[in-house]
Length: 112
Length: 114
Image 1 (tube, rainbow over the protein chains, first blue to last red):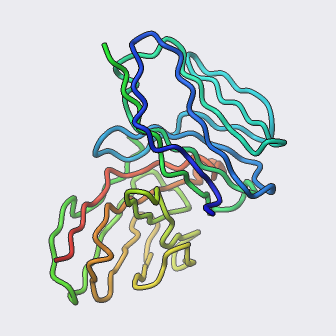
Image 2: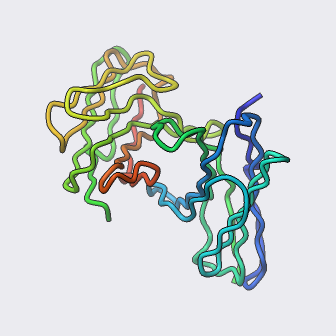
C-alpha cells in the first residue's frame, strides 16, 4: 500500500462547479500538507500549505485536513477552464524534512 | 518564476551511456532536489542537497549520483542509463528565508533511454 493515495481521474466538471480533490494517507505522523498544481508539460507550483488539522482558505481554494480520518481535500469554487491541470497532494512528518511524499496526482478538466 | 532552469530540456540517449542533467538557480536557495515523475508513481525524490557538497539519498537513488560544487548548480548523473530511467526529471529548490516547505520546481527534462 502506498503511503499516499490519490485518485488519478480524469475528473471532468462544467465551468462554475465546485470541485473536490482528495488524498488519503497511512502515516499518522504526517503533519504538513500541501497541494500543488501542475499544468501539462510544466513543473508543479505550490497552491496551498496546511499544518495539522483544519481548514485554510485562499481565494477560490480551500484546503481541509482531517487527521483522524487521514484524509485531506482541496476544494475549488467557481471552477474555471484555466483550473484544468493535474493536482498533486504532498505531505511530510516534520517541517524541517526535505522528504515530502507526493500523491500521483488527479487530472482535472473544467469544461467551458 | 523562481529563477530555476534545467538543461537539457529533452534528451534521447542509448542504454549504457552516462547522462548528466543540470539544474541552475539564481535565487540563492539552500536546498535543491531532483525528482522523477512517472505515470502511476507521481513525484519521487532521487537525491537532495542541503548545502554545497552536502547531499543525501532520496527514495529512488539507485543508478543516480549527484554533485553540488556551488550554490547555484545541482547536477544529476545517470551513471549507465537504462530504459527504466526513461522519465521526466524535475529539479526543485527551497529554503530561502528559512522556508523549506515551499519548493519551486523547474520546467523539467524529458529523458528517453532507448
